[in-house]
Image 1 (cartoon, one colour):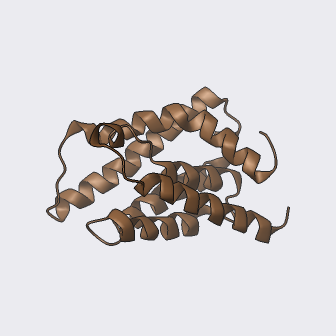
Image 2 (cartoon, rainbow, N blue to C red; image 1 turned 30 degrees about the vertical axis):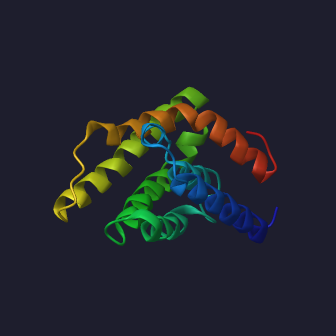
Amino acid sequence: MTATQVRVRMAVTALFALVLTVLPLPVWLDVLRPAFLVLTVLYWSINAPRAGGIGLGFACGVMLDVFQGPVLGEHALALAIVAYIAVREHQRIRSKPAFQQSLLVFAALIVYEFVLFAIDGWTGHPVTTPLRWLHCLTGALVWPPVAAVLSYSEGRLT
């Protein structure tokens, strides 16, 4: 698969994940929604670090900020940090079984949410409900099927 094909697949899956992330849902279901865009950026940062990585994280974060961020750039910064961690540790993460990968994804989602929490607090947009951390757990739980679907879209099964 050429680099152009990989980038096209990344763009399509990121756009689909963005739609899943901003799709309106009832409040009770919205709290449980995994951060699909973060999971997609993590997947591509781990499996195609040269094509995806920090640039993909930043671009996806800006798109997410345009749709739902109170401060332009907060999701971009958080996703770039998470993508940096994933790119830096991609070989270690890929070698782990799915359960351990889910734990590492859980940690990455905690970092993502903490960066958003800190920026919201510094800018005067605090969201202090403990439910904001629930999507970290649901994201870690759905990581194995999300990774399987994305690897299938990549044309290979890992």
